[in-house]
Image 1 (cartoon, rainbow, N blue to C red):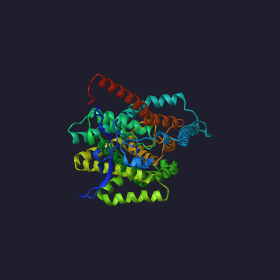
Image 2: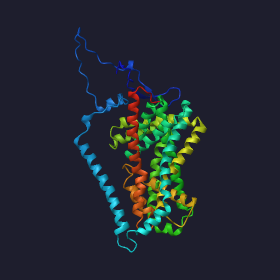
Image 3: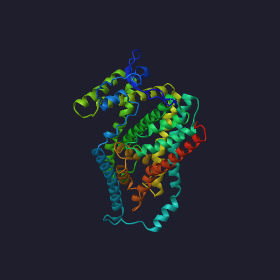
Image 4: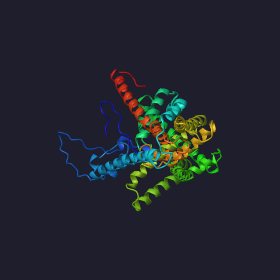
Length: 449
């Protein structure tokens, strides 16, 4: 607990208290002089060792939530077995979906279930090769818009844009989001990279949180609009197309409504907390208390602290950008552009394989975007990295009608490679290169800022 000689940062210990002036729950750092210190051993006086009360892991985490305490002994054989089972199940799910779509596209009984001829392959690729280039442009557009959001907020809070660092942060964050289930693992690495490259203090912590919130907010808005447009057919999807896969769209729309509700939970909780902090904190406490009593939630106090800490940090970040309307609108616009760039990967991939539903131009792009937002929302709660399995199957079933026989499976495969596996490969290479480059600069005494 003492400050080290080499001037490394001391661990930050925090707790949640109610501010007497604002009546809001806030995170308060505990001064080191208020923390009980252990008695140091001396050679002159023998101090009897007092018998300490054994504390549980949960109590220790509540007292020192920021230290990052990890008890390796808690990793039991059952946990390892469960992890291995989940990994095997994940591989079986992905391979099973690929096998099903391959069989259904090429081997299932039917006159049109055949491999495409070489003339068809060369004809499609020869006529639409440029759409593959546009798909890569859309991929890097996602990186650009994500980094631009960070840069806009960084400029507003620090006076410096740090554009290069923010673009790098966007790439690294996208990589770790795709590695982890439910796309929630990127923020800690974004904060680390920003703080290491010249964006210090609370700014580095608030920027990724604010961009994640706005990105989630934009996604929910576009998903809800897409569901409404789908039900009313505002964009004029051909009736033959709607009739052909009406069952698929009905199922996906139902799941998309559930996904939208789940996706809006965190942003909604943050907005409620910003408006009614005391009421919201009591509601969170009641939910975890009830979950603990019903044995639905394990370690309710620890989870309540983590949730409240996240909500407080999110609310603080939202208040920061909300106080700057121009910054808020700019970041929200960039969030919408990032979402459209993401769905454009699917659109350009489909066009590369000759996708055609009888509609052309911007209207066709809007229809495909509408389908994609419904698809992404319907699989958003699937707990696999990149929503693998569910994403593959849904894409195949949804866009099968607009493709030539034998092109649905390769279109789905190429789309997954571009929208998921490319992020993994490119992100891994970039992260590895960046790590080595930073180590080399530090060894040469250069600054990373």
